[in-house]
Image (cartoon, rainbow, N blue to C red; front, side, top):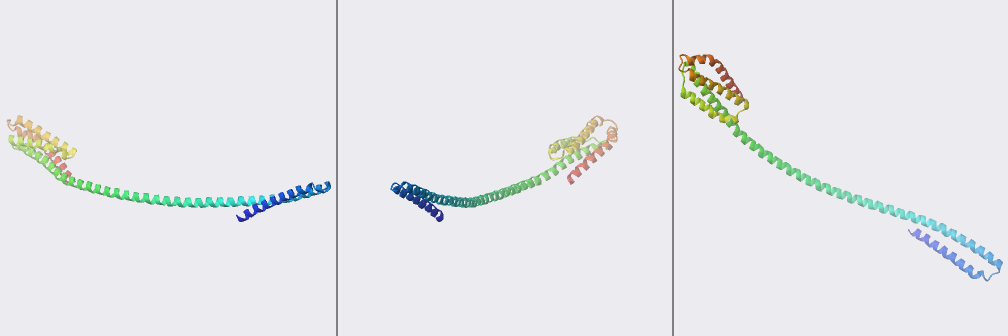
Length: 245
């Protein structure tokens, strides 16, 4: 920077020197003879041209140096500004990243804890419901099977020619009451129950008409008893397998 200022100073001095020469020549030009005036003018022109050339060269060099200096200063300022901005951006990004990471960690931990609590509550509720449902399910199967067995034993008396009206009516009522437990058993087992119940009711109704006939009930049992026994055993096996699952 000092050399650039020195260059500008030299240019100013040379310009001042040229102006001094021009002024001095102008003062003495009218005092000389015509021939001497021409020589003085030529000498002055040469001095001014020399001084101007030197001043121009120095000025051009100084301008170049000044441009280089300004360019270097601009590059340095840009580099410093870029470095400062990069540092600020890095700090800002790191701070934002750390903040987001902390918030995300807190959110994930809270969500995980909440999910674990909900799973625990759901598991406890499911186990409580399961512990309550299993005994009720077993009780439902026992109830409907007891009703079917009661009805089967009442109908089985036909083999001995006995029509036990009270036992048959009680068995029919037991099956009707047991039908209220159907929601606790499997759909297939509901069908087993209703099919066997209908079969028993059908034989009961037929027996109503044959009970006063000689050997009517025994004949009915001989004709229907075997199939009824197979049906009864099929339902028993199905219920047993279901409870053992």
